[in-house]
Amino acid sequence: MSSERFVTSTLNKKDTVQDSTLRPQRFADFPGQDKIKERIELYVQAAKERNEPLGHLLLSGPPGLGKTTLAYIIANEKGAKIKSSSGPVIEKPGDLAGLLTSLEEGDILFIDEIHRLNTTVEEYLYSAMEDFFIDIMIDQGPGARSVRLNIPRFTLLGATTRQGLLSAPLRSRFTLNCRLSYYPPEELDIIVKRSAGILGISIDAEGGLEIARRSRGTPRIANNLLSWTRDYAQVRADNAITGEVASQALTMLDIDDNGLDEMDNRILETIIVNYRGGPVGLKTIAVAVGEEEGTLEDVYEPFLIQSGYIMRTPKGRMAADKAYHKLGLEPLRREKSKKNESLPDLFT
Image (tube, rainbow, N blue to C red; front, side):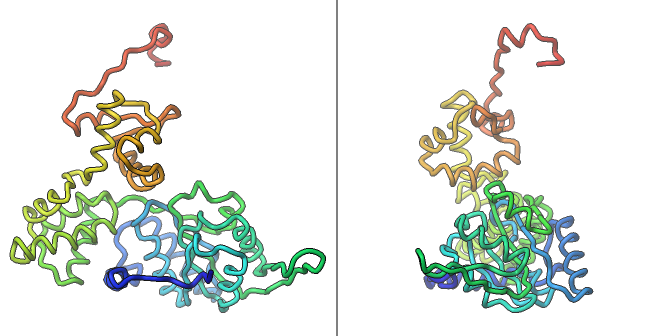
């Protein structure tokens, strides 16, 4: 299977065109992530002044925060060509060899979801990243032989939503490691207003902030909600997005004032109502809400944990006081065990 073959439907193609239109092309147009952006800008500027290829760079963080966008901005600011692929697509060492040998001096190879690389393929990256060659085995058995392929000096730019799944040898070979975090509503508001301007959407200050507040700290979700609100306003509000119109549109999607959707609330209700606030295992929650464990862990949990609704403990997930208040319930006060009652407050 070739690592550069992609099959897209007409709908996906349309979405990709719109998404690429909304993507910033320069650091100056990329709102938020100021500390990360400053580091990367310095990193790129230093490489440009020395007229050298960039060192290898790893971008990590939850989905939708702009890792792919930053990769293309880096290539654009550096003036380098970029070739992109993804971890699951590169199945064999031959796929990787094809990608690497097609690069030119100073090019950037962007691998999305790099933590999903095949272990064998990943090991071939070690020599490619450090010494810019790979050894490919040809044939099998007594006639097997190794062929060394030299590779131009390139930059590997990896993106991952699960940095913990990267092996230590691969992670240590990245010169710079940058983790993106969720955006505050004020920065998402800037993104919403920028996207609305590009798409020619009429939106007032309250409308933009209402969408930003309900976007779970994620630009991709903000743009998706803006697109839905535009459709709602077109049909029911004369194409004008106000705070009230945005609230009505997002309530129609069961997205509340804090950005929690129907599944988020089902997770909280399951932990609190069914299991007295926890602790309860992820597998049990997944069965109770009818969703895959991986989806809960990658899509829903990060926001719920960082927003202070649930806690991850060695025994399982527990609901925080904020989750009880969200559902209009009084937090459950657990009785101290006899063992703890005998200890001074310092230890309890």
